[in-house]
Length: 173
Length: 316
Image (cartoon, rainbow over all chains, first blue to last red; front, side, top):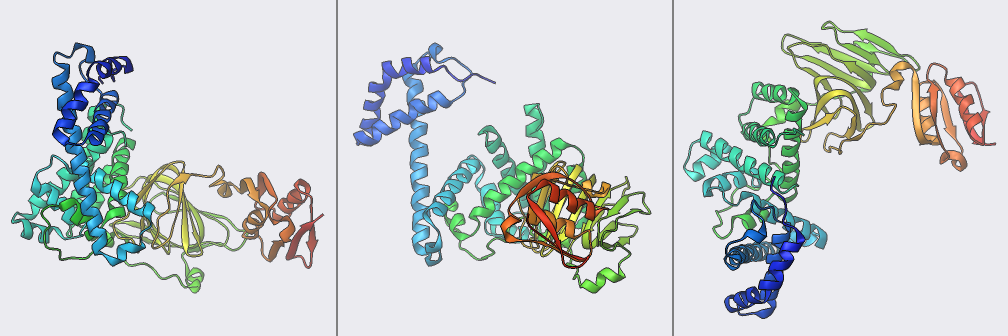
Protein backbone atom coordinates (compact mmCIF):
# COMPACT_ATOMS: atom_id res chain seq x y z
CA UNK A 1 0.00 0.00 0.00
CA UNK A 2 1.58 3.32 -1.00
CA UNK A 3 1.94 5.79 1.82
CA UNK A 4 0.05 9.06 1.93
CA UNK A 5 2.28 12.02 1.24
CA UNK A 6 3.49 13.79 4.30
CA UNK A 7 1.75 17.02 5.12
CA UNK A 8 5.14 18.69 4.79
CA UNK A 9 5.57 17.88 1.13
CA UNK A 10 2.06 19.11 0.31
CA UNK A 11 2.82 22.20 2.31
CA UNK A 12 5.92 22.81 0.19
CA UNK A 13 3.93 22.44 -3.02
CA UNK A 14 1.29 24.72 -1.66
CA UNK A 15 3.74 27.52 -0.86
CA UNK A 16 5.47 27.23 -4.19
CA UNK A 17 2.52 26.84 -6.54
CA UNK A 18 -0.75 27.80 -4.89
CA UNK A 19 -0.76 31.33 -6.32
CA UNK A 20 0.08 30.07 -9.75
CA UNK A 21 -2.60 27.36 -9.69
CA UNK A 22 -5.26 29.81 -8.55
CA UNK A 23 -4.39 32.04 -11.49
CA UNK A 24 -4.55 29.11 -13.90
CA UNK A 25 -7.99 28.13 -12.57
CA UNK A 26 -9.25 31.73 -12.59
CA UNK A 27 -8.41 32.12 -16.26
CA UNK A 28 -10.41 29.02 -17.07
CA UNK A 29 -13.37 29.57 -14.77
CA UNK A 30 -13.67 33.34 -14.99
CA UNK A 31 -14.55 33.52 -11.33
CA UNK A 32 -11.95 34.08 -8.64
CA UNK A 33 -14.11 32.74 -5.84
CA UNK A 34 -14.68 29.44 -7.61
CA UNK A 35 -11.02 29.28 -8.61
CA UNK A 36 -9.93 29.73 -4.99
CA UNK A 37 -12.29 26.93 -3.88
CA UNK A 38 -11.01 24.53 -6.50
CA UNK A 39 -7.40 25.31 -5.74
CA UNK A 40 -8.14 24.43 -2.12
CA UNK A 41 -9.84 21.21 -3.21
CA UNK A 42 -6.86 20.31 -5.36
CA UNK A 43 -4.44 20.54 -2.46
CA UNK A 44 -6.88 18.79 -0.17
CA UNK A 45 -7.00 15.92 -2.62
CA UNK A 46 -3.21 15.73 -2.61
CA UNK A 47 -3.26 15.49 1.17
CA UNK A 48 -5.80 12.68 1.16
CA UNK A 49 -4.54 10.67 -1.79
CA UNK A 50 -2.24 7.67 -1.70
CA UNK A 51 0.48 7.82 -4.33
CA UNK A 52 3.19 5.48 -5.55
CA UNK A 53 5.74 8.30 -5.75
CA UNK A 54 6.73 10.89 -3.14
CA UNK A 55 5.65 14.41 -4.03
CA UNK A 56 9.19 15.72 -3.63
CA UNK A 57 10.29 13.65 -6.59
CA UNK A 58 7.70 15.09 -8.98
CA UNK A 59 9.37 15.94 -12.21
CA UNK A 60 6.89 18.59 -13.28
CA UNK A 61 4.96 19.68 -10.20
CA UNK A 62 2.83 22.19 -12.10
CA UNK A 63 1.89 19.70 -14.75
CA UNK A 64 0.87 17.30 -12.01
CA UNK A 65 -1.12 19.97 -10.17
CA UNK A 66 -2.99 20.82 -13.35
CA UNK A 67 -3.87 17.16 -13.89
CA UNK A 68 -5.31 16.93 -10.40
CA UNK A 69 -7.05 20.31 -10.73
CA UNK A 70 -8.72 19.15 -13.94
CA UNK A 71 -10.11 16.14 -12.16
CA UNK A 72 -11.37 18.38 -9.41
CA UNK A 73 -13.13 20.53 -11.99
CA UNK A 74 -14.66 17.57 -13.76
CA UNK A 75 -15.92 16.13 -10.47
CA UNK A 76 -17.24 19.49 -9.45
CA UNK A 77 -19.26 19.99 -12.61
CA UNK A 78 -20.40 16.44 -12.56
CA UNK A 79 -21.62 16.87 -9.04
CA UNK A 80 -23.25 20.14 -9.95
CA UNK A 81 -25.11 18.67 -12.91
CA UNK A 82 -26.23 15.67 -10.89
CA UNK A 83 -27.43 17.94 -8.12
CA UNK A 84 -29.29 20.08 -10.63
CA UNK A 85 -30.95 17.03 -12.20
CA UNK A 86 -31.94 15.84 -8.75
CA UNK A 87 -33.47 19.20 -7.79
CA UNK A 88 -35.33 19.42 -11.09
CA UNK A 89 -36.63 15.92 -10.54
CA UNK A 90 -37.78 16.86 -7.06
CA UNK A 91 -39.58 19.94 -8.36
CA UNK A 92 -41.51 17.83 -10.87
CA UNK A 93 -42.78 15.43 -8.23
CA UNK A 94 -45.34 16.73 -5.79
CA UNK A 95 -44.93 13.63 -3.61
CA UNK A 96 -41.27 14.56 -3.06
CA UNK A 97 -42.47 17.51 -0.96
CA UNK A 98 -42.93 15.02 1.85
CA UNK A 99 -39.18 14.46 2.04
CA UNK A 100 -37.49 16.33 4.86
CA UNK A 101 -34.36 18.38 4.04
CA UNK A 102 -32.25 15.71 5.77
CA UNK A 103 -33.81 12.95 3.69
CA UNK A 104 -33.16 14.92 0.52
CA UNK A 105 -29.56 15.44 1.51
CA UNK A 106 -29.06 11.74 2.28
CA UNK A 107 -30.65 10.81 -1.01
CA UNK A 108 -28.45 13.25 -2.90
CA UNK A 109 -25.31 11.97 -1.18
CA UNK A 110 -26.28 8.39 -2.00
CA UNK A 111 -26.89 9.28 -5.62
CA UNK A 112 -23.53 11.03 -5.84
CA UNK A 113 -21.87 7.95 -4.37
CA UNK A 114 -23.66 5.65 -6.82
CA UNK A 115 -22.75 7.94 -9.68
CA UNK A 116 -19.09 7.71 -8.69
CA UNK A 117 -19.34 3.94 -8.25
CA UNK A 118 -20.83 3.45 -11.70
CA UNK A 119 -18.42 5.84 -13.36
CA UNK A 120 -16.21 4.08 -15.85
CA UNK A 121 -18.68 1.30 -16.59
CA UNK A 122 -19.95 0.84 -20.09
CA UNK A 123 -23.22 2.58 -20.94
CA UNK A 124 -25.13 -0.67 -21.21
CA UNK A 125 -23.87 -2.10 -17.94
CA UNK A 126 -24.84 1.08 -16.14
CA UNK A 127 -28.27 1.14 -17.81
CA UNK A 128 -28.92 -2.51 -17.06
CA UNK A 129 -27.95 -2.04 -13.44
CA UNK A 130 -30.08 1.07 -12.93
CA UNK A 131 -33.11 -0.41 -14.69
CA UNK A 132 -32.90 -3.55 -12.61
CA UNK A 133 -32.02 -2.07 -9.25
CA UNK A 134 -33.79 1.29 -9.27
CA UNK A 135 -36.69 0.66 -11.62
CA UNK A 136 -37.30 -2.96 -10.72
CA UNK A 137 -37.48 -4.11 -14.34
CA UNK A 138 -37.12 -7.80 -15.09
CA UNK A 139 -34.01 -8.98 -16.91
CA UNK A 140 -36.15 -9.98 -19.89
CA UNK A 141 -37.55 -6.44 -20.15
CA UNK A 142 -34.11 -4.91 -19.83
CA UNK A 143 -32.76 -7.25 -22.48
CA UNK A 144 -35.50 -6.15 -24.84
CA UNK A 145 -34.87 -2.47 -24.22
CA UNK A 146 -31.14 -2.70 -24.67
CA UNK A 147 -31.35 -5.15 -27.53
CA UNK A 148 -29.15 -7.73 -25.84
CA UNK A 149 -29.61 -11.24 -24.45
CA UNK A 150 -30.81 -11.98 -20.93
CA UNK A 151 -27.47 -13.59 -20.11
CA UNK A 152 -25.74 -10.33 -21.11
CA UNK A 153 -28.03 -8.46 -18.72
CA UNK A 154 -26.99 -10.83 -15.94
CA UNK A 155 -23.35 -10.14 -16.76
CA UNK A 156 -23.95 -6.38 -16.83
CA UNK A 157 -25.64 -6.42 -13.44
CA UNK A 158 -22.84 -8.56 -12.03
CA UNK A 159 -20.10 -6.30 -13.34
CA UNK A 160 -21.86 -3.14 -12.15
CA UNK A 161 -22.42 -4.68 -8.72
CA UNK A 162 -18.78 -5.66 -8.57
CA UNK A 163 -17.73 -2.15 -9.54
CA UNK A 164 -19.86 -0.72 -6.73
CA UNK A 165 -18.49 -3.19 -4.18
CA UNK A 166 -14.88 -2.54 -5.16
CA UNK A 167 -15.41 1.21 -5.17
CA UNK A 168 -16.89 1.05 -1.67
CA UNK A 169 -14.01 -1.17 -0.52
CA UNK A 170 -11.34 1.15 -1.92
CA UNK A 171 -13.08 4.20 -0.50
CA UNK A 172 -13.05 2.55 2.92
CA UNK A 173 -16.85 2.73 3.09
CA UNK B 1 -12.92 -9.77 6.61
CA UNK B 2 -10.19 -11.57 4.65
CA UNK B 3 -6.69 -10.26 5.36
CA UNK B 4 -5.47 -10.54 1.78
CA UNK B 5 -6.69 -7.60 -0.38
CA UNK B 6 -6.62 -9.78 -3.49
CA UNK B 7 -8.87 -12.32 -1.81
CA UNK B 8 -11.18 -9.49 -0.73
CA UNK B 9 -11.56 -8.36 -4.32
CA UNK B 10 -12.01 -11.87 -5.63
CA UNK B 11 -14.74 -12.64 -3.09
CA UNK B 12 -16.55 -9.39 -3.84
CA UNK B 13 -16.52 -10.43 -7.48
CA UNK B 14 -18.05 -13.78 -6.58
CA UNK B 15 -20.65 -12.12 -4.35
CA UNK B 16 -21.55 -9.75 -7.20
CA UNK B 17 -22.13 -12.70 -9.51
CA UNK B 18 -24.38 -14.41 -6.98
CA UNK B 19 -26.28 -11.22 -6.54
CA UNK B 20 -26.84 -10.76 -10.27
CA UNK B 21 -28.08 -14.34 -10.56
CA UNK B 22 -30.43 -14.04 -7.60
CA UNK B 23 -31.87 -10.79 -8.97
CA UNK B 24 -33.04 -12.60 -12.10
CA UNK B 25 -36.79 -13.16 -12.24
CA UNK B 26 -36.28 -16.85 -12.95
CA UNK B 27 -33.84 -17.50 -10.10
CA UNK B 28 -35.01 -20.80 -8.65
CA UNK B 29 -34.66 -22.74 -5.48
CA UNK B 30 -31.64 -24.64 -6.70
CA UNK B 31 -29.81 -21.37 -7.31
CA UNK B 32 -30.72 -20.09 -3.87
CA UNK B 33 -29.54 -23.34 -2.36
CA UNK B 34 -26.26 -22.99 -4.18
CA UNK B 35 -25.95 -19.40 -2.97
CA UNK B 36 -26.65 -20.40 0.63
CA UNK B 37 -24.06 -23.11 0.28
CA UNK B 38 -21.59 -20.50 -0.91
CA UNK B 39 -22.44 -18.28 2.10
CA UNK B 40 -22.00 -21.21 4.43
CA UNK B 41 -18.49 -21.95 3.20
CA UNK B 42 -16.61 -19.45 5.34
CA UNK B 43 -16.84 -16.23 7.34
CA UNK B 44 -15.01 -14.54 4.45
CA UNK B 45 -17.82 -15.46 2.07
CA UNK B 46 -20.32 -14.04 4.52
CA UNK B 47 -18.23 -10.89 4.86
CA UNK B 48 -18.47 -10.42 1.08
CA UNK B 49 -22.22 -10.99 1.13
CA UNK B 50 -22.66 -8.45 3.89
CA UNK B 51 -21.03 -5.88 1.62
CA UNK B 52 -23.68 -6.75 -0.97
CA UNK B 53 -26.39 -6.26 1.63
CA UNK B 54 -24.97 -2.85 2.51
CA UNK B 55 -25.06 -1.85 -1.14
CA UNK B 56 -28.58 -3.20 -1.41
CA UNK B 57 -29.65 -1.06 1.55
CA UNK B 58 -28.13 1.98 -0.11
CA UNK B 59 -29.99 1.26 -3.34
CA UNK B 60 -33.22 0.72 -1.48
CA UNK B 61 -32.86 4.19 0.03
CA UNK B 62 -32.99 5.80 -3.41
CA UNK B 63 -35.07 3.41 -5.49
CA UNK B 64 -37.59 4.77 -7.90
CA UNK B 65 -37.87 7.12 -10.82
CA UNK B 66 -36.34 10.18 -9.23
CA UNK B 67 -33.09 8.36 -8.56
CA UNK B 68 -33.18 6.67 -11.91
CA UNK B 69 -33.72 9.91 -13.83
CA UNK B 70 -31.05 11.69 -11.84
CA UNK B 71 -28.40 9.05 -12.43
CA UNK B 72 -29.42 8.49 -15.97
CA UNK B 73 -29.15 12.08 -17.11
CA UNK B 74 -28.70 13.49 -19.62
CA UNK B 75 -30.29 10.70 -21.69
CA UNK B 76 -33.50 9.76 -19.94
CA UNK B 77 -35.04 6.53 -21.10
CA UNK B 78 -38.82 6.59 -21.25
CA UNK B 79 -40.13 5.45 -17.95
CA UNK B 80 -42.43 2.52 -17.78
CA UNK B 81 -42.49 0.46 -14.69
CA UNK B 82 -43.15 2.03 -11.32
CA UNK B 83 -42.01 -0.79 -9.14
CA UNK B 84 -40.83 1.30 -6.24
CA UNK B 85 -39.06 -0.75 -3.69
CA UNK B 86 -39.72 -3.95 -5.54
CA UNK B 87 -36.09 -4.18 -6.47
CA UNK B 88 -33.59 -6.85 -5.74
CA UNK B 89 -33.92 -10.56 -5.61
CA UNK B 90 -37.46 -9.89 -6.68
CA UNK B 91 -37.90 -13.47 -7.73
CA UNK B 92 -36.96 -14.82 -4.37
CA UNK B 93 -40.37 -14.44 -2.78
CA UNK B 94 -40.50 -18.19 -3.13
CA UNK B 95 -37.76 -18.52 -0.55
CA UNK B 96 -40.26 -17.46 2.07
CA UNK B 97 -42.99 -19.36 0.36
CA UNK B 98 -46.46 -18.87 1.62
CA UNK B 99 -46.60 -17.82 5.24
CA UNK B 100 -48.21 -20.21 7.65
CA UNK B 101 -51.20 -18.96 9.56
CA UNK B 102 -50.79 -19.60 13.22
CA UNK B 103 -54.09 -20.16 14.94
CA UNK B 104 -53.65 -20.65 18.67
CA UNK B 105 -55.31 -24.06 18.40
CA UNK B 106 -52.47 -25.15 16.13
CA UNK B 107 -50.26 -25.32 19.22
CA UNK B 108 -52.45 -28.00 20.79
CA UNK B 109 -52.09 -30.20 17.77
CA UNK B 110 -48.39 -29.61 17.33
CA UNK B 111 -45.87 -32.42 16.98
CA UNK B 112 -43.97 -31.34 20.08
CA UNK B 113 -45.08 -28.98 22.78
CA UNK B 114 -44.41 -28.01 26.36
CA UNK B 115 -46.66 -26.68 29.10
CA UNK B 116 -45.97 -23.67 31.30
CA UNK B 117 -42.79 -24.17 33.30
CA UNK B 118 -41.81 -27.23 31.29
CA UNK B 119 -38.71 -27.66 29.15
CA UNK B 120 -38.11 -30.49 26.79
CA UNK B 121 -35.25 -31.83 24.69
CA UNK B 122 -35.97 -33.69 21.49
CA UNK B 123 -33.53 -35.55 19.27
CA UNK B 124 -34.76 -35.28 15.68
CA UNK B 125 -34.52 -37.98 13.04
CA UNK B 126 -31.45 -36.38 11.42
CA UNK B 127 -29.62 -36.11 14.74
CA UNK B 128 -30.36 -32.40 15.24
CA UNK B 129 -31.23 -31.39 18.78
CA UNK B 130 -34.16 -29.23 19.63
CA UNK B 131 -34.90 -27.79 23.07
CA UNK B 132 -38.36 -26.39 23.68
CA UNK B 133 -38.73 -23.56 26.13
CA UNK B 134 -41.74 -23.14 28.43
CA UNK B 135 -45.17 -23.05 26.73
CA UNK B 136 -43.79 -23.74 23.27
CA UNK B 137 -44.87 -25.77 20.27
CA UNK B 138 -43.31 -26.88 17.00
CA UNK B 139 -44.31 -28.98 14.02
CA UNK B 140 -41.83 -30.85 11.89
CA UNK B 141 -41.87 -31.25 8.12
CA UNK B 142 -38.92 -33.41 7.22
CA UNK B 143 -38.76 -34.88 3.77
CA UNK B 144 -36.23 -35.89 1.15
CA UNK B 145 -35.56 -32.30 0.15
CA UNK B 146 -35.58 -30.33 3.38
CA UNK B 147 -35.76 -30.26 7.15
CA UNK B 148 -38.39 -27.72 8.09
CA UNK B 149 -39.37 -26.78 11.66
CA UNK B 150 -42.55 -24.74 12.14
CA UNK B 151 -42.38 -22.69 15.32
CA UNK B 152 -45.98 -22.34 16.50
CA UNK B 153 -45.35 -20.53 19.75
CA UNK B 154 -42.76 -20.00 22.45
CA UNK B 155 -39.07 -20.51 21.89
CA UNK B 156 -36.67 -23.21 20.74
CA UNK B 157 -32.95 -23.74 20.84
CA UNK B 158 -31.71 -25.68 17.85
CA UNK B 159 -28.42 -27.45 17.23
CA UNK B 160 -28.40 -28.72 13.71
CA UNK B 161 -26.73 -31.95 12.72
CA UNK B 162 -24.83 -32.18 9.48
CA UNK B 163 -27.04 -33.31 6.60
CA UNK B 164 -27.19 -32.55 2.90
CA UNK B 165 -30.74 -31.21 3.21
CA UNK B 166 -31.21 -27.56 4.19
CA UNK B 167 -32.42 -26.89 7.74
CA UNK B 168 -35.22 -24.33 7.80
CA UNK B 169 -37.36 -22.83 10.51
CA UNK B 170 -40.53 -20.85 9.86
CA UNK B 171 -41.96 -18.48 12.44
CA UNK B 172 -45.16 -16.52 11.85
CA UNK B 173 -43.09 -13.71 10.32
CA UNK B 174 -40.44 -15.31 8.25
CA UNK B 175 -38.09 -18.10 7.35
CA UNK B 176 -34.71 -18.85 8.89
CA UNK B 177 -32.13 -20.82 7.03
CA UNK B 178 -29.54 -22.41 9.30
CA UNK B 179 -26.00 -22.29 8.00
CA UNK B 180 -24.62 -25.18 10.07
CA UNK B 181 -25.42 -23.92 13.44
CA UNK B 182 -26.74 -23.42 16.97
CA UNK B 183 -29.39 -20.77 17.45
CA UNK B 184 -32.40 -19.72 19.48
CA UNK B 185 -35.68 -18.45 18.07
CA UNK B 186 -38.58 -16.99 19.96
CA UNK B 187 -42.05 -16.30 18.63
CA UNK B 188 -43.44 -13.13 20.14
CA UNK B 189 -46.58 -11.14 19.49
CA UNK B 190 -46.16 -9.99 15.88
CA UNK B 191 -42.43 -10.53 15.71
CA UNK B 192 -39.68 -13.12 15.90
CA UNK B 193 -36.44 -12.87 17.86
CA UNK B 194 -33.36 -14.73 16.73
CA UNK B 195 -30.07 -15.16 18.59
CA UNK B 196 -27.24 -17.02 16.87
CA UNK B 197 -24.77 -18.86 19.09
CA UNK B 198 -22.61 -20.59 16.49
CA UNK B 199 -22.00 -20.06 12.76
CA UNK B 200 -24.76 -18.14 11.04
CA UNK B 201 -28.44 -18.04 10.12
CA UNK B 202 -30.04 -16.34 7.10
CA UNK B 203 -33.32 -14.51 7.79
CA UNK B 204 -36.05 -13.90 5.23
CA UNK B 205 -39.22 -12.07 6.36
CA UNK B 206 -42.27 -13.33 4.49
CA UNK B 207 -43.51 -9.94 3.31
CA UNK B 208 -40.11 -8.65 2.20
CA UNK B 209 -39.15 -10.80 -0.74
CA UNK B 210 -35.52 -10.43 -1.50
CA UNK B 211 -34.47 -8.91 1.80
CA UNK B 212 -32.39 -11.61 3.40
CA UNK B 213 -30.01 -10.85 6.19
CA UNK B 214 -27.32 -13.08 7.58
CA UNK B 215 -27.02 -13.08 11.34
CA UNK B 216 -23.65 -14.20 12.66
CA UNK B 217 -22.67 -15.99 15.84
CA UNK B 218 -22.93 -13.66 18.82
CA UNK B 219 -25.60 -11.53 17.18
CA UNK B 220 -29.32 -11.23 17.69
CA UNK B 221 -32.02 -9.68 15.56
CA UNK B 222 -35.73 -8.99 15.74
CA UNK B 223 -37.91 -9.10 12.65
CA UNK B 224 -41.54 -8.87 11.62
CA UNK B 225 -43.21 -10.05 8.44
CA UNK B 226 -42.51 -6.65 6.90
CA UNK B 227 -39.49 -5.35 8.75
CA UNK B 228 -36.01 -6.52 9.41
CA UNK B 229 -34.08 -5.12 12.35
CA UNK B 230 -30.34 -4.60 12.45
CA UNK B 231 -28.25 -7.39 13.94
CA UNK B 232 -26.93 -6.38 17.36
CA UNK B 233 -24.77 -8.05 19.95
CA UNK B 234 -26.61 -10.98 21.48
CA UNK B 235 -27.47 -10.67 25.16
CA UNK B 236 -25.12 -12.69 27.38
CA UNK B 237 -27.76 -15.14 28.54
CA UNK B 238 -29.62 -15.47 25.25
CA UNK B 239 -29.77 -19.27 25.48
CA UNK B 240 -29.26 -19.87 29.18
CA UNK B 241 -32.95 -20.76 29.55
CA UNK B 242 -32.08 -24.08 27.92
CA UNK B 243 -29.95 -24.83 30.98
CA UNK B 244 -32.72 -23.71 33.29
CA UNK B 245 -31.50 -20.23 34.10
CA UNK B 246 -32.72 -16.76 33.28
CA UNK B 247 -29.63 -14.56 33.10
CA UNK B 248 -30.27 -10.83 33.06
CA UNK B 249 -28.09 -7.77 33.03
CA UNK B 250 -29.56 -4.50 34.33
CA UNK B 251 -33.12 -5.44 33.40
CA UNK B 252 -36.12 -3.47 34.56
CA UNK B 253 -38.13 -5.27 37.22
CA UNK B 254 -41.29 -5.32 35.08
CA UNK B 255 -39.41 -6.96 32.20
CA UNK B 256 -37.88 -9.54 34.52
CA UNK B 257 -41.28 -10.38 36.01
CA UNK B 258 -42.84 -10.69 32.56
CA UNK B 259 -40.10 -13.15 31.65
CA UNK B 260 -40.42 -15.15 34.88
CA UNK B 261 -44.18 -15.14 34.39
CA UNK B 262 -43.74 -17.25 31.25
CA UNK B 263 -42.42 -20.06 33.44
CA UNK B 264 -45.11 -20.08 36.08
CA UNK B 265 -48.87 -20.27 35.84
CA UNK B 266 -50.90 -17.41 37.23
CA UNK B 267 -50.58 -13.65 37.37
CA UNK B 268 -47.30 -11.97 38.19
CA UNK B 269 -47.09 -8.19 38.17
CA UNK B 270 -45.68 -5.20 39.98
CA UNK B 271 -46.55 -1.79 41.32
CA UNK B 272 -45.64 1.01 38.85
CA UNK B 273 -43.59 2.61 41.63
CA UNK B 274 -41.03 -0.21 41.47
CA UNK B 275 -41.40 -1.24 37.82
CA UNK B 276 -38.32 0.71 36.75
CA UNK B 277 -35.92 -0.68 39.38
CA UNK B 278 -33.09 -2.55 37.72
CA UNK B 279 -31.36 -5.75 38.64
CA UNK B 280 -28.85 -8.25 37.35
CA UNK B 281 -28.46 -11.90 38.18
CA UNK B 282 -29.27 -15.51 37.35
CA UNK B 283 -32.68 -16.89 38.34
CA UNK B 284 -33.61 -20.58 38.42
CA UNK B 285 -36.45 -21.15 35.97
CA UNK B 286 -37.49 -24.48 37.47
CA UNK B 287 -37.99 -22.76 40.83
CA UNK B 288 -39.92 -19.57 40.03
CA UNK B 289 -40.75 -19.22 43.72
CA UNK B 290 -37.05 -19.09 44.62
CA UNK B 291 -36.48 -16.61 41.82
CA UNK B 292 -39.14 -14.33 43.27
CA UNK B 293 -37.60 -14.58 46.73
CA UNK B 294 -34.24 -13.62 45.23
CA UNK B 295 -35.83 -10.55 43.63
CA UNK B 296 -37.36 -9.55 46.98
CA UNK B 297 -33.95 -9.79 48.64
CA UNK B 298 -32.14 -7.79 45.94
CA UNK B 299 -34.51 -4.81 45.83
CA UNK B 300 -36.50 -2.71 48.31
CA UNK B 301 -39.67 -4.61 47.49
CA UNK B 302 -41.89 -7.30 48.99
CA UNK B 303 -44.19 -9.92 47.52
CA UNK B 304 -47.87 -9.48 48.03
CA UNK B 305 -49.93 -12.61 47.44
CA UNK B 306 -53.59 -12.60 46.60
CA UNK B 307 -53.65 -16.32 45.93
CA UNK B 308 -50.88 -18.84 45.24
CA UNK B 309 -51.08 -17.93 41.60
CA UNK B 310 -51.55 -14.22 41.88
CA UNK B 311 -48.45 -12.37 43.07
CA UNK B 312 -47.73 -8.68 42.95
CA UNK B 313 -44.37 -7.08 43.73
CA UNK B 314 -44.89 -3.87 45.72
CA UNK B 315 -42.62 -1.31 47.48
CA UNK B 316 -41.26 -2.67 50.76
